[in-house]
Length: 385
Picture 1: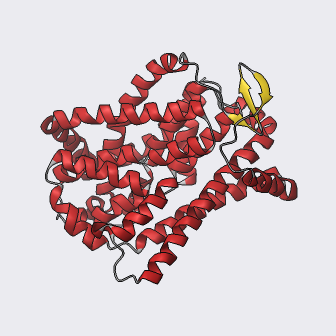
Picture 2 (picture 1 turned 90 degrees about the vertical axis):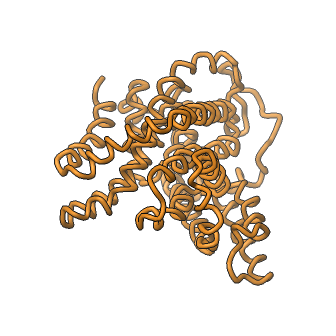
């Protein structure tokens, strides 16, 4: 999903030959720019509506969350499972930020919930492929889940170490005494409410969001906000569909044979488009047909897994949550640094990933047990008190 950077990306799409929209006239280019701008505005409005609805529902949500999230471990499990349910890790990360904005979760839980959104999001493609596999013949497993398994293994190999290191560093980050978020026209400082003096979001947006909440109720507004976020993502994906993917492949795929270049392209490309579905979708057909080798696509996916946090960072900025900005920035930095280790020891890393990969896709029993563990682990994180 794209946000502020979408505007920049629209300029890139129109001006840069490597991502130029094929066959578009000047009039069509202007129309595309307005579509991008409209999608950005819709997404920003949906995020603000979600934040206002969560703020209004905070008393009810607090009672519910106190029963479910009883510690940091359960916060990780909740966001992990929520990513399965919503089939989108970015929305879960956005929801986690709004919960923190309303003082419904603490900083450590926010950190773990954002990490959980990535751990859960990595399994969505795998579940889709597994569904096809379990309903077809055994020979279809390598085709139906190959990219899902690879993406899952790569994502978890990075974000699990990031989780451990980041969780240890959180007390240090919290000691920086970052300002607390702006909430409903007031700023929370040292648990006191003082009038807000600096407005970072146009005053018109809160007027509309509060009007919608007053008109339809907080629950409906909450569901509406989630629906609008989904809609804006779908609209942007549709805009990206007009990009000449063949030109992108011709220009960049031949450069994926260098691991550092491949990693950089995956990171920057996903960060600019803020759509993992698009950045992976460009190369998936070639990978499935054997035109791109596993050694070439692994660095690309590693970069894409870090670039996908950019939209979460922008959401934290849009909601004016300084602690959220620092938390997501910490994840970005740690993810980048941890991703450098596999690149430095690339042969060993690829060999290790390949062992797990081959075991999972070639053995039906291992694969089914693996799928069960994907549900069991987050449920245990929630259930074990």
